Image 1: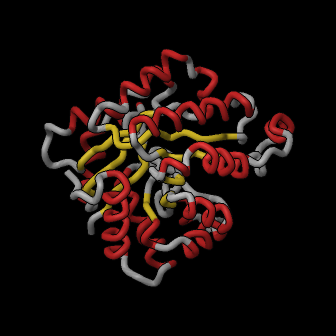
Image 2: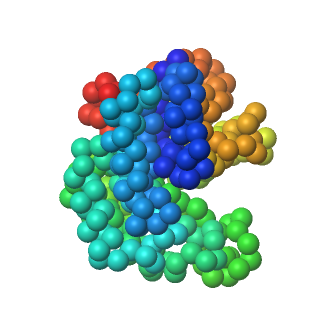
Length: 286
């Protein structure tokens, strides 16, 4: 089986003690590539994924590591002019294949106000457009949040806000991107697909109560689907409760195979081709 984990935070300290072994397990599981998400613990650390991609490019036997860079919406209050200039500089690195994860998050009460999140999202879309790079979208609503978050965000709909901003500021670029760890409705999926986005499913698609996510996965054509782990978060069944890692993306592929009545190998082949088309101009993985 060939697979690409299209979203993993392998620069996080969760892997400092066994990063080589973790990547070797990924290789043994059939992974040909990993997109390391460059948000770190905030803007001052968004270079770390690119540093890992550079380090492992000289070490054979591991999956190809690509990287993104971006400022997570939860960190948007720390998006200074200097941080945005750093992001623009990082996008010039040939190993940087996307800007993200960026977007809107109305789930946590401690997150910045809506206007701050939206401004920083727009600014980062502008940087991505100038670099001609796709974007990786994070979107989380306040529907199931704690009362403090629901009160702070006053019933605002993160998906509605995000899709409106994409229509205004991103769709005209034609560059597309990825709806990461998708948990939206079929209507959100339709609008995302119409805007040129691929839809990526993570380990939560395997959870017993995640039927709405599985319904969305059945709705999205495989030609516009990616698989991811969002490691170290959201470990799939049967690893739920453990630290997640890229090797476990095989469980996501297996769940998608059941949904689409095909084989995990077919899921791997299709999603790898989708990844290559969006990020590598259809070229084979390194």
